[in-house]
Length: 214
Ligand SMILES: N[C@@H](CCC(=O)N[C@@H](CS)C(=O)NCC(=O)O)C(=O)O
Image 1: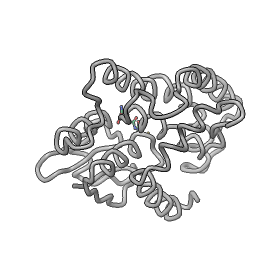
Image 2: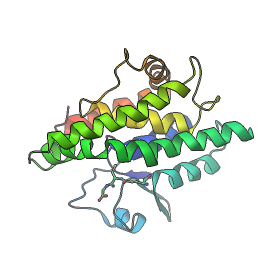
Image 3: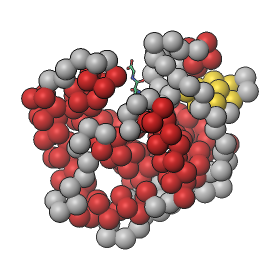
Image 4: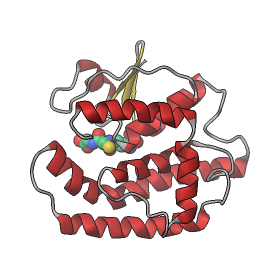
């Protein structure tokens, strides 16, 4: 199976970690928005990453792909079976995708996309305003993060989605302050210590070096 995208994207990393949790092997061919391959264009009509090709099947969107993986490899489910835990797992994924990403997005754009990918200066005021907004969301998250275990009780897609965005925040010097957010920091350490996360992190270092980002 092929995964199109780059691992510094929170959505691409989420998919790669879920695949690793499930023991699904993924190849990541070199990817460029400027020169996208035909398979990527066929899989992702709006040219967003991630997208996958699995034989004659193509799919885009991290949530859709993770749902596909969960059905393909139902062991180690990323959606808890218990009703309340499942609802919480989906909530935390939504929190990451629809609240945290839009909050931090202007900072990623102005501190990463513009200066590091396009070679032009970003708007630091806009970045700082976005980080302040992001920290407001982290204040909520700090209050609901358990002292032990996982966000929804069982390990789930919610843990992967939120942790993946926190990892991307490190690229723009907006990583977690453990003094301000101790519960999140301890939980983040638990997520990132998992073997699946570690295997993707090793790949990510290789990609970052190849792209001149590390
Ligand atoms: N809801 C989508 C979001 C995907 C997305 O926005 N990806 C970004 C990279 S982090 C992208 O491809 N941006 C390029 C663009 O919008 O042109 C998902 O979960 O996969």
